[in-house]
Image (cartoon, rainbow, N blue to C red; front, top):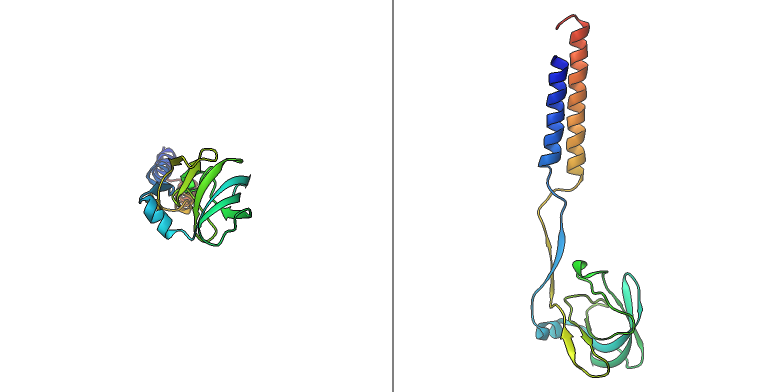
Length: 169
């Protein structure tokens, strides 16, 4: 009877560790600011057509340069995070863009506008970026809590067996 009660307590403790453990941190991209601020903070502003897309970079064939040292007709490689959730940008191969970059990288909030054909009609995208972190402890906290609960349960089982071996009910 006592053994069952001890096991119920141990399982309840384990359940509390899992239920009460904090969530994993969540990263999100939120953009604030204006086009003027984006242009002012950029090292380079070019118009070009995407000639290559990988999971971490793009390559543009430069058509015009508004700011920086890029050369018309040359290929410009820029680092970019995959997906907009990571403040990246989903560039499409063969599509024309006006792209702001800093330090050889660009992203959702750097100032990217898709351009329609040879005209300069623009579709504005999001503006400047900021990463925010949701509160929470690292995953090792959960593993540590589960380990402590399992050791406590094992200790209770050993203690119950010793008492039973001595003839105590």
